[in-house]
Image (tube, rainbow, N blue to C red; front, side, top):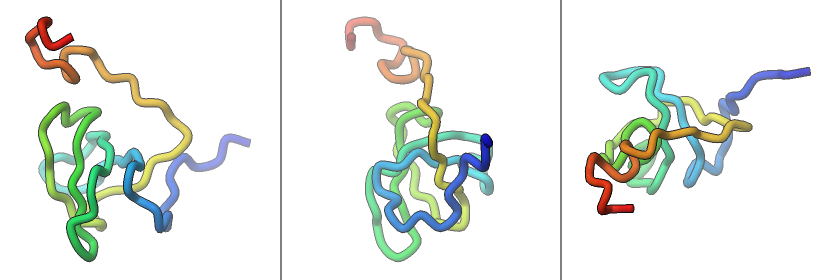
Length: 83
């Protein structure tokens, strides 16, 4: 019934939540913000906060059917005036 939560071959990656499986950011969740070229994407938000990271397609899986719960300090930083 549950089935897998990853779509391995989803062609529409922009705006999708991803799980990084390789590289220095392995184990993090993020959202694809922009496609930079063939198999290169700009990822931000979730575990990355405001940081923007360039990842190749082979470094992540597209994650589906899950809402991301992000601590507010990762979104707004340590400055409460941002809210």
